[in-house]
Length: 141
Image: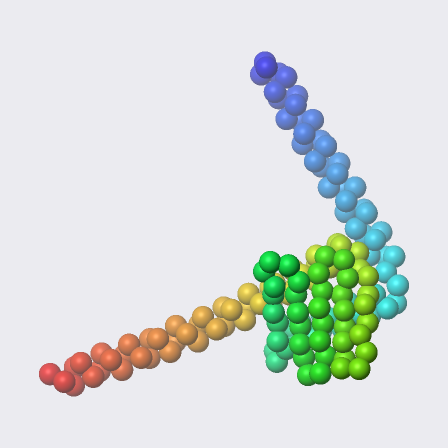
């Protein structure tokens, strides 16, 4: 393949990629506008629960299902829907995949932030223990 053909092919690929990005953004924004009141309220509720520091966040690595537990509420969501349970009733709410992807991003960021805090505590305790060991060694001389 000649240089010009390769270059034209690259330009065409870039054009197609940009076109589909614009198209997908328009599709996502129109999809978000089509959420009904139940879906909007469910998304708002789940986002708030994820951000609670005392909420339990779990990830099932094989199935890709995310779990949130806070007080007596239990939420489970995957690629197509979310389920909210309050102990008596369960609500199965279908969601567009783009909305659930955004929700997963928020969920993963919160899990990552918690992991980072835990590692900082671990490092701090490790340093304190190492300092104690060092002091013991100096006092033993």
